[in-house]
Length: 290
Ligand SMILES: O=C(O)CCC(=O)C(=O)O
Ligand SMILES: [Fe+2]
Image 1 (tube, rainbow, N blue to C red):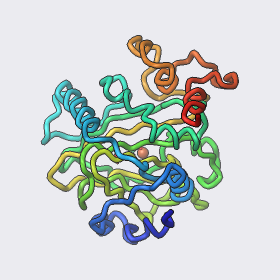
Image 2: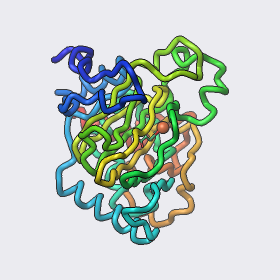
Image 3: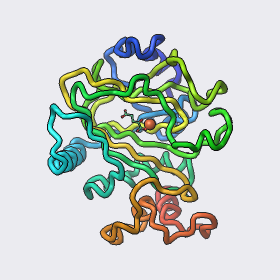
């Protein structure tokens, strides 16, 4: 198993936003070789790509769904960015992602089977679409503030999946950028200066990265010539409420498998005292182990 720190070290940049392209060395991030390595990287660095990529057919199906949404929204290539919350109601093809085994395995091991997806979005960034200056943030809204604890003292409440549907592997492609290990920051909760260590995730289409939402991260500027398409969704504990549109507003989801219903926040299973083995994800874990 490669040493994760060494494997990622060449792509760290010392000078941040001023020259994000300096972070790229022309190589893609290496894929971890096992789920254990995914979990090690997630714990140690705060992010990891999955050991497996989505196959090209699935990427094509997801991109066709993105095209349908863009058509509905009247979103053309020269337009500003598209950022739509509540991904799974946009097209059933997106729902097929929620229980993809190479992702669900490590996510469930990291968090537990008592999870659902409480926040999701579709993002389309044409060339030249605007970026928030700086843009560094941790996810979770006011969770961190309300805990009144430094990031290093906050518990891990969530793991977010970033699914890249187009290649984001050249300087200026608008890569997702993250400050490695910032989930373990023992400094002030809000940074006012540019971080000194930035990891842009240079990844081909079909790659899924998991990240610890306590990490500082942002989207880089797309100064290139192709549109970046990506979807994001956050797995968290079922005792944390949903930020997406309510499950109850989507009767069409009643026909989904129990596992998918759990992940889309069906309230039929009690979140605080689920009976042992009661959750669909308990059964999934037991089957995967057997
Ligand atoms: O679009 C990106 O690369 C970053 C998105 C982001 O901040 C998030 O999904 O939490
Ligand atoms: Fe974010």
